[in-house]
Length: 118
Length: 114
Image (tube, rainbow over all chains, first blue to last red; front, side, top):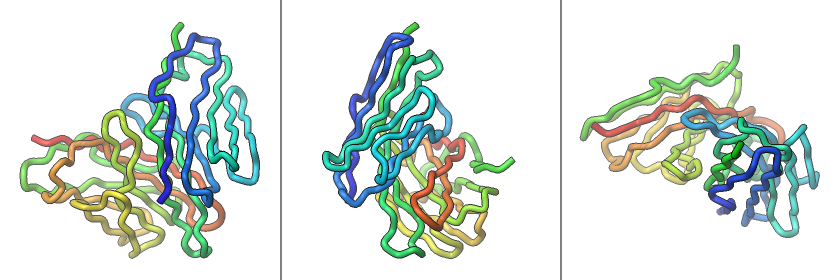
């Protein structure tokens, strides 16, 4: 089955600098890659996702890149702010072969604790 | 206001006791999921359901059971067979049809052993 590895497990950056979190996946059939942000004791919230038909997607200070050949994808946060401090999770899944098999199994990485230092 | 509601927020289990965690959604989503999150770890899938009256085991289903009698509800029972139940439990839902769609999470239930 799918296996997702996430690095680093902890990341500390100065406010205003950029942060990059990387994930690798094992199943070449995976075609959907969401990123979630989880603040302490709260629900994971989707911040950005990318599908395998594109190589990059950007939303203001957040961007995700996908390299299907190497089977890795990365989250980039620019101009970091204190409120970016949280745990970030990557995940991967693949579309079911038959249309009625709609439920997707997301496989999550282990998470990265990002700390933004003022 | 649409969303996913989990209750209770905190739950304590005694030895040999079964406890049930509630998950309700009003997003009209077909698919629902239960995840377990341990400290410093990612989310692991316990059970998932594509449609009413249907559910499948995830990666760590042993010691858990679910039901899906209504589209809006997907309760999780942690049985006495689950020897290490202390964790943060998250329920999620997603639109069933079409290409991969985002999963939306509830606020979670924190389960502890008395």
